[in-house]
Length: 200
Image (tube, rainbow, N blue to C red; front, side, top):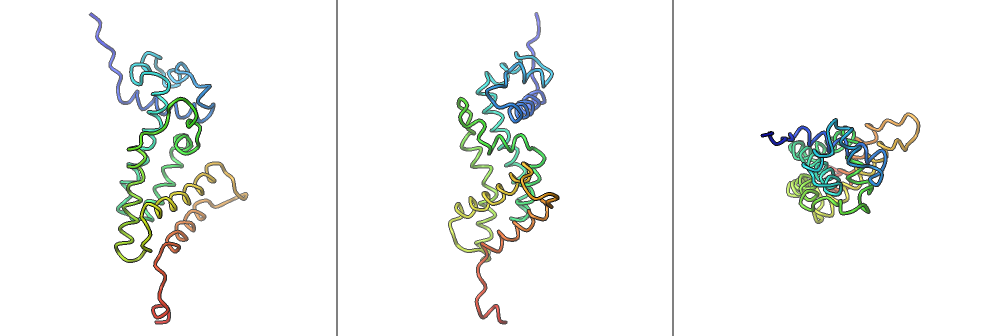
């Protein structure tokens, strides 16, 4: 009696990465499960066994991207807002295909490939936690933490997206530009110094 084929977590990860790369390059409509299996060096049977079908596979790619991103943010939380900002750019540059699939909209109109709500909420959690901590310490303005976190995310996302697309002046120092943006974000949300404090 033949033993059932066991597909490892390693193969699952390889399939997710291969899918992200193929979709990023060709678009979701043109990518087939045969393409994915060939890129990962396995069979379409393995893809069906692990994910069920193309829509499920694409959804799993986005979910895994948000989980990986969220884990990197959680690991950087101890470094505060500066640490989170640095980790954001590092993850995006290390996972460009997944980053573009998360935020580029390539999958938004294809089947039902939206990320799971809990996954996206968890990914933003460390940033909201850091904002709340800064506000409780008295250094940041007392605006709704959700609003502040969304505004910050939008700013760093915009600059990282420009870097990935290489849309900028020739010879652009993206690291310097990003550091300047992080400093500007911190200043923009800081509690303004009183006139007495400024003159002392």
